[in-house]
Image 1: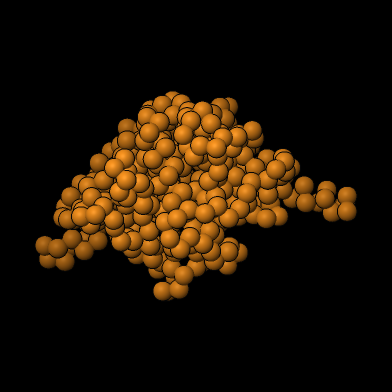
Image 2: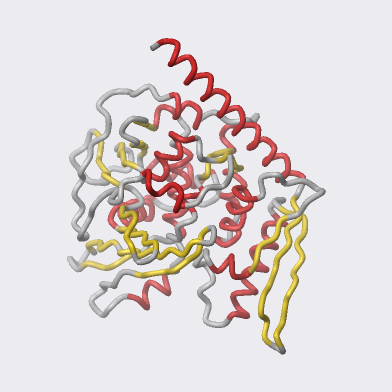
Length: 368
C-alpha cells in the first residue's frame, strides 16, 4: 500500500471525534456490551513473525501529528502563576501539505485542591505504544467496523508490567497521571486554518466493574481510540514493526526517525539507501532547542542510537552552505540487516492481509 496523506483520508473521518469544549470530561459513547466479530481486527492482530510479543502496528496518519514533544521544563515555562496554560500550537508539513495542531492541556486537580495544566509527553507516548500493543490481543480489545470504533481494555497494573518488561518502567501514579492527561487534553487539527479534526488521545474513558475512577491499580478500564486508528484497521492502513526495538530506544527523536523509516523506507535493502533533510526532522516538533547547533547535535545523537539498536548500520551527512550559513542538511541512511529483514516481513504481512481481506470480501458476496 502506498503512503497516504492526512488530506486524502481526513474526509472519511468525523470532524469532531470527541467534541470537548472544556476540560470537563464527559463520556459521550459507551463500549460494546458484547463481543463483535471483526475480521478487520483479526487481520490487525496477525503478524509475520516467530515472536508476536515483539511486534506491533504503526498508523502513520495518526503518528504524523505531533503530540508528545513538550518537555517538563517547557511545560513549566508555559504555565501561569496559577498553574494554568494556554493551548500550544505547532505548524508542520506532512506530504507537502501544511497543517497546524493545537494542543489544549489537561487541567488536573492537585492534592491542595488547585488545578495544574499538563501537556502529553514521553510517558504518554510510551503508554500509547503499550495500549496499541494490547490492541493486538483479542481479549483486550473491541472493534466495530460499521461504527468505525475501536476500544482497548487495560488496568494500571497491566501497563506497569508491560512498560517494565520493555525497560520503560513507570510507577502506577505516573501511569495514572498519563492516562488522565491523555483523556483530558484535546488535540485540534487544522488545514489551511480550517478545523478538520478534534479529539483526545484516549476518548470516553470508563472504569469497568468499579465505581472508583482509576483508583484501584487492578481495576479494568476501557477507552476508545481516535478514529484515525479505527479507520486504519478497517482499511488495512497500518504497518508491522519491531515494537520491542522501538521501546528500547532511549531518545524520543530516535523513536520518531525509526517510525518514519518503517513507514517510508519500505523497500529497504543493501542496494538502496534512504535520505531525509533536517527540515523534515523539524516537523517532528522534537527540535525546539534555542540554538540550531544544539538541534543538529540532537539529530546526530538520535542517529547514533539507531546504529546502536541495529536499525541502521551507518549514515552520511551532506551540508549545503551559503557563505558561512548552513542552508540545507541531508542525512543519508543505510539500513542494518535486521531492519531489512523486518521490512520484508512487514511487506509480506501487508500482502497477506490484502489477500485475506479480498478473499473474505468475496466469500461474503457469495454468502449474500
